[in-house]
Length: 355
Image (tube, rainbow, N blue to C red; front, side):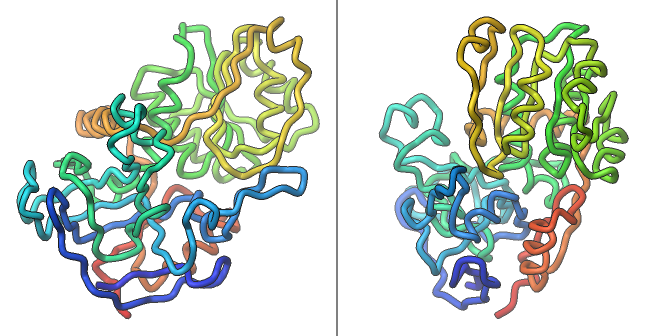
């Protein structure tokens, strides 16, 4: 098999020819056809997450020690089955749910593999979809996406799932309520699309890129805001008529957090998904006085992915922009994503992989 691996953090990925694994027990071997490139791959590639104040969380401390294979938005074809595997057959085309837990802890037993502290997350803690074969421990992690374009379906495993799960953490919305989407890259587009599919109309798109804001408006946002404006908080309050009740932050930096928290009406809920990095300091009494909720959302669980796929299959979910590129352009794609030059999502055609 061929994989494009991190050999040294921050350096170009290198093609490696390795022995193809053979599935054992309930395992399933999937030949990857499409692999999405996600913004969180950049942090894994760099080797750390910025905690602010000069502090870093190094991925090596979680088990990501080079060489390793990234890629956690997999779509592929079932190629081989372990002797105890069931539920799929060779040739089935499936999304691979990558957030695989240990299967034994309280989180896994509750169906929250993505919260498992001993997880085997593909592309993070186990070989991922920047390889042309992925070994999946159980067929239950394979989701049928019949009727969906393969490249778009791949992005549902992380980008779409992250947006879907975060939206589920918003308060119950009324017709007067507004939701801010902070960051209008591929993940922001997915968030807007899912909000609209669920009947939410009062969406304000927030970004620093005029092109991304225009695309967000075309995809269903009702208003937009350039967050670089010196009076951005006042502008956001004016746009929403002081009815901003929810914010989903796909950037995750001090400026975006402060914008949302500063513009909320009482009872506002801030949901952070982005991992850009940094730290914030908040006075504590206003959290109670304004009844604010500040929390995070980490990808989503298997049931949420199945619900999201069903939503996409229903035709109610507008597809986010996806560009398919050959495997030879994987390093260029990471560089462009890091530079903020990607509109929508880039998906790698792993069938073009070559050493």
